[in-house]
Length: 572
Image 1 (tube, one colour):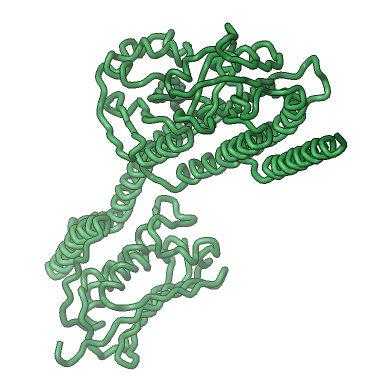
Image 2 (cartoon, one colour):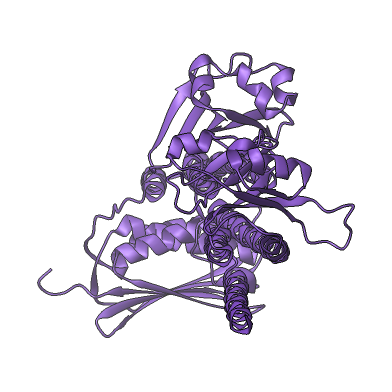
């Protein structure tokens, strides 16, 4: 008798050791991962071994759909089980919060044999209990899920099994809550990364289609739906941009995508209601639509529409709510459309401004040769003008007219980026012969002293007309800087395999803030009608002659330009 009692005690001890070992493994499992799917697998595997049952399932509550669901069903063919709260044993426990221990499932009216029929599995005994949310207040706590254990291998589930399962359920509740917090944190990081990526696109991508495509692709990947689309306004009407989960995209114009686009009801209604306003083809393809207000600079409000197919604002069965993220994404789309619309208008305005500046420059630069022609015309009308003087004046006027033609052609070539020099064998004397009359006319009656010194004897390969234009631009700038007095110097001398042109004045100098940008287009300072294009043309012409130009300027002491052109080689 004592031996039998001893054997019984040993058997119970071994069972307790087994239970403690299993509980220890469950504890290790609960603390080993924060990913919910992995966690459910670990929990169910260890519970099944601990209770000596055939199969275990953990259902989680899906309040949005009034269901319980599980992706874990050991020894079953179904990978995901879903059923309404209140239906079946597990559904009853989810609704009531009561623990149920059933020795024979088919004798209980609450049992639903549908799953058995689908899988061929035969359910005998059931132990089912709720998993309560971990909280200090029992009145406010909610059910997170239901643990269901089927078919005790050595009989029926005992009160001891119930006690063990209740203890495990409380640990499971903590682990589920931690896993959900981890998922929410992980989702928040994903959301931040997604929105940061969108912000980068807005500041670096220069076409609206490209940035919208990137935003829709990122949204589709983030939400996990089948297809995402956007209806948005362009210059010629509404367009539809679609992105599918396989990465394919398409864009098409829409005539009747929205039946009543101007209706206030669609603008102010919720996403679900707006589906009725889409044409039949889009309504059958998409199951979600959200309006996106787009504000224009003329205070008009247009609307874009974000569409989704097989959409769920909740990620799978996780209760991870994406609605707030979608709203932020919608704001990004609205901002993108507004930003690129504004950018297009600014580019258009800049083009018009550039054209205006170019025209202003042409008119401004034409003024001097036209004034010169007028002056010589007046001299021709004077009675005491000799025949020789009239011929001289006529030749100067012809040069001025040719200069105007060359100048306008040159400016147009500069705007088009063309190279248009026609170099010929020339000397500094040839250049001065052409330039000196214009130079003297430019400084006539200004009070500015003109100094000209030519010491060069070398030949250069140059377009004389273009070089005269270079020197004229520099001299004209000096005249405007000097005002009613001062000195302008034009000197030429030879160097080693080069000819050097020095043009200088003793004026106020060039401001420091523009000195490093003086050869850029439209850089100017202190000139009443200039646009700063003159020196940009100067730099371009010198570059085309394979020469260099250097600037030296000191505040209050004047400005000097040194132009160096290569000497003409003997075989040229």
